[in-house]
Length: 187
Image (cartoon, rainbow, N blue to C red; front, side, top):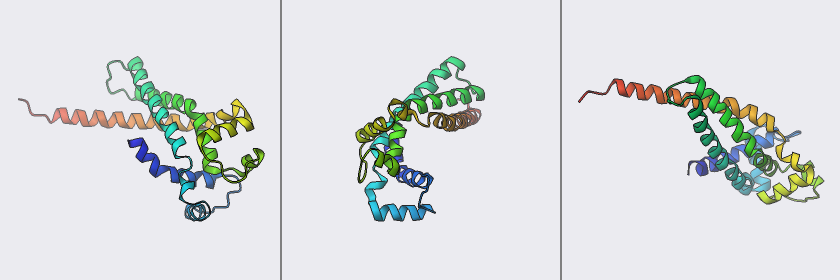
């Protein structure tokens, strides 16, 4: 449920970010981008990649959490507060999840940006919609390697992000649990 709500809010933000990052983007501010997309493409443009986003985030989170827990069992079997084990496990879990879901991210980016050059190379006039169409188009333009464009950047982005997230989470869990135990009154 958290992923459904998160993506419902963040998908429009991702569309704006990606449209502004495109080469020769006509948008000079986020507000300008929102107005232009709303006026020319409507509300649906902000959610064109929503199902792809969910299809990517659910496996990403599953792989991420399962890998983190598995690695913690290997490097921190007693599950004590060990910052290095949380950083290493978190970073590796994020890297694996990012690598495994890169094909979905490539398709999501194509749906969000509606990259004119790609659309014209594939002889598509109008808008590209749907994950299946995005998968076909990526394959048509770049073959199997096309699904892994940007994989290194995605891993480099996710590793520190997930390492930091897990280490902060584990620190506060340790701090709050320790504080709670110290303040407990004996029976």
